[in-house]
Image 1 (cartoon, rainbow, N blue to C red):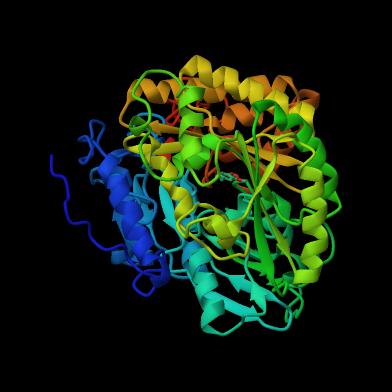
Image 2 (tube, rainbow, N blue to C red; image 1 turned 45 degrees about the horizontal axis):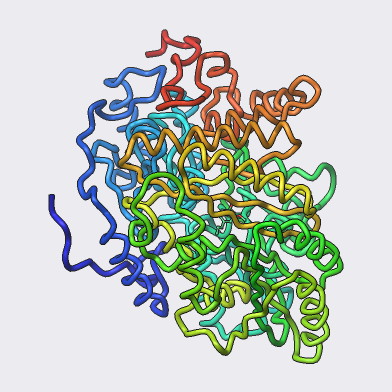
Amino acid sequence: MSIPNTLSQTPTLSEKHSGIPERLLDKAQKAKSLIYETRTQFEAPSRQRGVAIPQGISKVKFFEVLNELRYEIGEEWVELNDKELKGGWYMEHPNTHDMMNILDAEELVASAVVYPGDVEDVQKIVGWANTWRIPLFPISMGRNFGYGGAAPRVRGSVTVDLGKRMNKILSIDPDDYTCLVEPGVSYYALYEELKKRGYDHMWIDTPDLGGGSVLGNALDRGVGYTPYGDHWSVHSGLEVVLPTGEVLRTGMGALPGSNTWQTFPYGFGPYSDGIFSQSNFGIVTKMGMALMPNPGGYESFMYTFPKEEDLAPLMEIIRPLRISNILENVAQLRHCLQTIAVRGQPRSKYFSGRGPIPEEIIHEEMKKTPLGDCTWVYYGMSYGPPHIRKYKLDVVHQEFLKIPGARRIDPSTLPADEYFWSRDKIAAGIPDLEELLWVNWMPNGSHIAFSPIAPIRGIDATKLYSLARKRHDEAGIDLMPAFCVGLREMHLIVEIVFDSSDISMRRKADRCLRDMIDDAAKLGYGEYRTHLVLMDQVAGTYNWNGNALMRFNERLKDALDPNGILAPGRCGIWPERYRGRGWEIGTGEGGGSEGDGVKPDWKERL
Ligand code: EUG
């Protein structure tokens, strides 16, 4: 076992489309060294199952047709995935599998990767996949961590890594406040480009970590923390390669020479964009997005609340403030354990026993922080010039202090490395890297999310919190919930941090997630997004009127992708060729990533 004592430098944006901006390089090196300090597994276990060959084609034939793909796209842009299944970290991660595997490491693995250089290449790849019935799995940056990373749902899929060569910012319009991007543009890259061009009058919106694809995140209906935090709602216009190879542009983009593709999202006729988000109906190659006007000032604020039971009354206070826009952004209410975990130290520093870390220890640790002891921490931001902010902040203060023991923490008392300042940047659309640090809670730290949607009500927050608490206690897992409050609903985000080298911990996490999904569904809550291995289960909870929605999705799938080549099983949507053949993944170590094969409809061609 070799432990690297000098860590290589994180690639920068000037070197790589997926790199870190120079301004964050120090932070990246520190984060990386903390991660490698908690790592116990340095070498990937050797592969027992060999190269992952897609179902329905022989290994010999697959290798043969891969050469055809090489001929079409270029030798250097097709890679066979016959290497060890390496780990990595947020900034330097594999594109052929999930380095945060919840199932056995050899389950969700690609056979090969192809790197298209343009839309024509994507069409060629799709054509090739149709000829040989090869499953494709498109990724943009591949940083969908917590939901499967870059991994394909079907073992042996060919990963279409769009980001490596299709990473241009095609336009930034300083008058309309819009942009048009390709899949490989990260929040880091878009932000740096705005700065470089001196466009200080425009803001972007970023999630907690800035390395993800602007296009990919919006398609997965991801969330950020400025007033433009609902990324899908502020996108305008897609260019899509259909599974059969045709290219279309949605909205105003369908009108040749249109000058409003990025300013009017709907165009004429049915609004088709929705079927290309969280789906497997097309490969999106361009996306337009609105940029936010610089509000002319901003000010973060933080409140702490002492007791677990404060959650319900607090939600009742937050709802009207949020709907009336006194609370202006997707703000976060976090359990204090996250505040401890985000300092980047392993759990073992605080507690080495089994089961969830005891309350007393959490509160002893909180007392040592600049926040002082509390149970909930609210991070918010007020936008606009000082006199506008003052009005809103005064209302917030008056309302929040109705909770006994509530405290406003004066930001000027906080040290420069306090997590608050990371939230301050993110709520101002400045992409950061700090959030990453809580993966160190466990050695070989990995995370996977439970992400239900709920009304902004005390009763709902309590019900979800209690069911999460119960299932975490049963599984012996630490609960670190964060409520992300949208305009009329909230996303509860519970990230389970686990050691991906520990099979028993992986099983417990899997059990806990599946129980929470079922419990939540019984109470009327559904997830807004989920991990690859949970998609069948989550899709199964959206079953009103005899699965009417899934039957509709399947009809669309069969019409648009008759050979079932595009991301089979993504979001629980299986093409006809795979349906009823045991591909669904339930509890356990997987297996469903390979199903019981595919419909033997064209064997004679092999
Ligand atoms: C987070 C937020 C999400 C998500 C996964 C993680 C942030 C954790 C609001 O959506 O889906 C701190």
